[in-house]
Length: 302
Image (cartoon, rainbow, N blue to C red; front, side, top):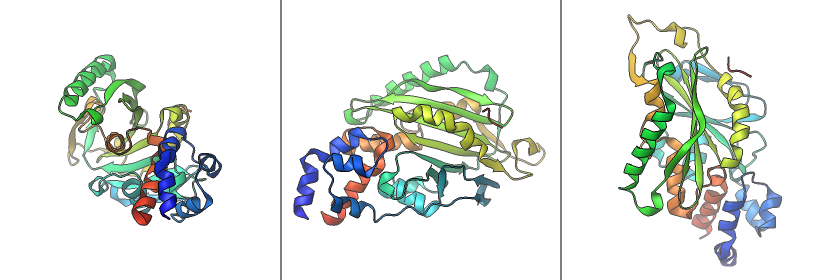
């Protein structure tokens, strides 16, 4: 076993992490991973679900799209906390995650759509058509630069632009955007989808690498349309005489904080930057799986 650990330390880890966005056994073997090591990684089997998944917390449901399986809270926690090194404190609002159905073990997961809920109240959308997103980007970039001044060098990330410009689809009250970040070690995309209801919003965060963004663009409508609020809880069911209005606005959802509060998956990037000196979000699973090895043995929407 000691020899196996030494073999990994000898440079294989970094090569694997920097080379793959679609993890397969053949590709891993071509980089020097042995059959014994693969068998170890295969012990963490994905237990995905299909069909209609109810979300009683937010009075909505998910009809799992073709080509995906759904990870419940426990399975998502295993992925997000154990494999992607996020603190457990990130989990309270997570409902689950969609992953490609061909991911049989956690180390094979290259793309995930993490679904969470924020019971923040009814978000008014009357500012959606008046936002100057180019100006907003400049403000966010300046904020990002300011936040970097207080961060260690290895944790600094710069907002380079919109990977997907913000768009609000009023017909189904859905907000979509993606921010592109870079660091000394690489780049990462923070891809967000927000589906508004009368009491809050369902959030879908796509964990991807830069090379996956076109595929996510093609699938975003499918993902968004798979989530539906129950009757009485849709955005159109809002009653100003009894329902709570949120402090958030459409512009505020996009702005947030850039690094300290940018969202779920930018934190993963920063953690990886510290741990592995890289930021390749779509392949986090394999890196953390190897870490676990050491720790145990060492189209139009709507």
